[in-house]
Length: 434
Image (cartoon, rainbow, N blue to C red; front, side, top):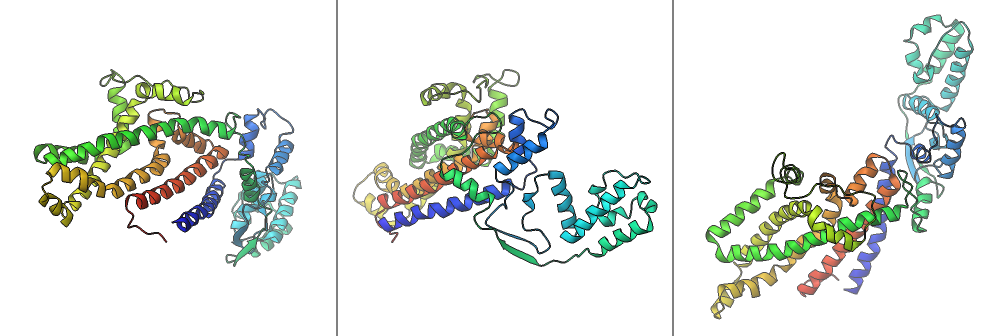
């Protein structure tokens, strides 16, 4: 048992490392510029500051964006070792366009000289020539006005184009963007949010209170309501059991976002239905303690609890009822009945304890699923939790916050699965891990 726990704990490290790597690399595929966003949050823009490019370059280097992305990379063999060393985005886009077109460094340098020569020619009027590849320049009307020497230079550049290149594996060592970012994370420096300048830890912690409270209340109600309902449905059977079966099936097939939308539209305003719940006016950035959240939860955010509970109860009831039906077919049930125990005693004292393993699986699996999937509910019901914060951070490229939330979800997922495995062993000693 001890060896199993140690192995599982050690596996958390590579799991989080891979998770960090994936999130970091995916964030770099977006079109948003983190440096530009950071400067904009400080009131520095190209329109308001004449030295913007100089300030941008300094911040670009300060954040280690001039280094390769990761420890290793795979690129066509004609690509430069580190394209990120160029801070100017327009120049970088110009080089990427030519590289994707099959031109190597030598051809790109020649094309730069060609463009400079064309722009210095007073007889020609050319605009934005950098946005065209050499073969596309030939299609322009201006090409007919080029001198024979200029056309020859362009033809020489075009002949250097190659459509096939071998992949090149490159090792960049520890001097890369991800390594510096990971070092800051391990040192406890998560940085600040680009949107409001608040510390990332403080911002995520405030949102986590809401999500954690919603999750705990949902799990408690799930067990307190789900288990008795299933027991009575199995015990009574008949019309009551069939009614529970149909109700659970109904909520099981309804998508949660649709159910949440229906509750919000028809139960929070008198315009379309009944105003059973107050409207949502909670300030997202407000700081509230855990007790403040708990006190306001059942009034302002009760619709979210109902929506989540109905959906989870549908899954919980169907799975638990199915497991009880399987247990009823085993020989020990008939033996217990032969000893004179009533059907209710057999159901509660023998069958139900043997279904604890499936119950644990449901509960433990629902915790990380809820942390990752609370985004829809929190956006619809305007709950200032981690799901809504993650959604806002992704759409506005606040990657420092995104990194932290994803790591929290990954860490808690591994922890809860470990707790679930330990509970399996506790309730069923026959299970062996070593």
